[in-house]
Image 1: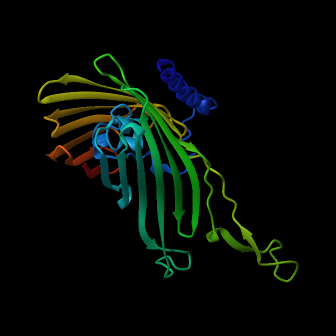
Image 2: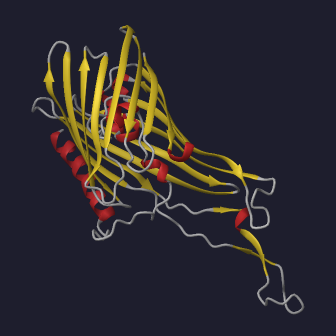
Image 3: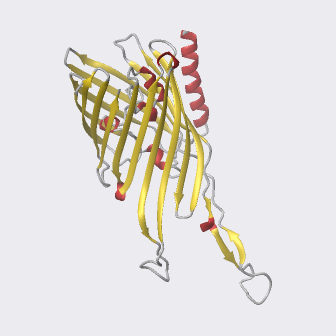
Length: 343
C-alpha cells in the first residue's frame, strides 16, 4: 500500500511538472488565461487563513482546494453556502454539498458563481444608453468523489463544467481537479497536494461577434454587407498546482493552534506562498490570521483575518458560521461570510 501511495503522489507531481515545463520563469503570464473567477477562493475559514488550505482541507471546503481532504471527514453529510461582495460590486457565491458513504467514499458537488450587475449598453451614438442592458456571468458546476485508501491517506477528484458569458457571447469548457491528502506519523502533520483546473481551452462565441462588412468599401461595386464574424482566440484556464503542510503546534483539552503553509505554482503568474494560523477553543470558537500571495510579483494581496463558530446541537447535527477578511491593497478589502450544516 505504501508503494501505491508514493506512486500516486509522484504521478501528481510529475503531471504538474510536465504541464509547467514550457513556462518561462522570467515572465509572469498575467492575463493569459480565461475563467479568472476560478482563482478567487472559497470559504471564509480558508480566506481567513490566507488561502493556505491544501493540507487543512478536512471539511466541505476541501472540494475547492483539495478534493482528497473531504474523505477524512466523519460527518454523514455537509452543506454550505458562501457569499462575498467582490471587487466593483461583483457578486461571488459558492455552494457545496457532500454525502459520506462510509467504506465506499464521499460523493460531493459544488457550484461557483460570479455575476456582474446589469448595466446600460452605451455606444458613440447613445452614450447614456440605447435602451438595452448587458451583464456578465461566470459559472462552474462540479461533481466529485474522494476515498480513503488507508487510514491516513486519501485521494479525490472533481469534474467541472465551466461557462463564462458576457451579453450575447459565451465560452464553455471542462476541467479536472484532483489531489492527495496524507497524515504523517510526525505529530500528525498533514501533507496535501492538489492540481486544479486541468482542462480544455475556452473561446468566446455568439451572435454579438457577427457584423456586416463591405470588402470593397464601395457600395456600388462588388459584394457588400457581407455577413462576417470577429475572430476570437482560445485561452487556457488557470491551471494551478499546490502543495501544503499543516500541523497542530498546540493541542490541549480546550485549545488547539494549527499552522498551515501552501506553495502554489500557477500557469498564469509567478509562484507564491500562502500561510495561516487557526486558534480554536473547544472546537467551537475560532480566530484566524494569515498572509496571502507572499513572493507573488506585483501582488495587491496580503494580510487576512477571520473568525468562526461551530455549534453542536447534538452528536449528529452542527451548524457553523465563518467570517473572513482579506486585504487587497489599493483595491477594496473583501469580506467573506459562509454558513453550513453538518449532520
